[in-house]
Length: 96
Image (cartoon, rainbow, N blue to C red; front, side, top):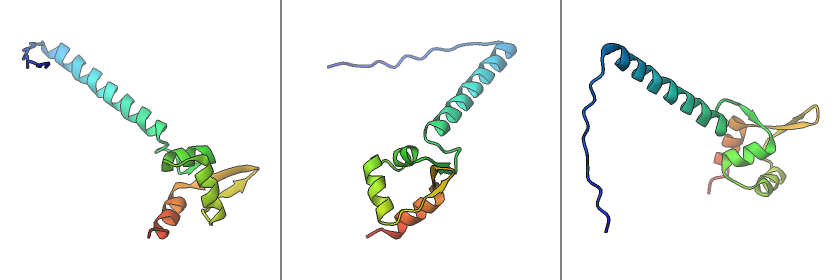
């Protein structure tokens, strides 16, 4: 059996060091949030097929089957795009 002991450490910082630490934590948090948003495509309204399948948590082939059943998409200049809003509405309209 492993036991984890809680250890408390008190750190005393002068005002400038405290300010720098807060700024560092803020920037680190902000960068992590932006990276997470990009990785799940939260910053985009339209996605290509592979990213849409990933966003939905389904396979590329499942999305292809959904297209046959009427899942909305559009093709502009040979590029197929899916609207997250329209696809979400379509999915919700097919709940059992």
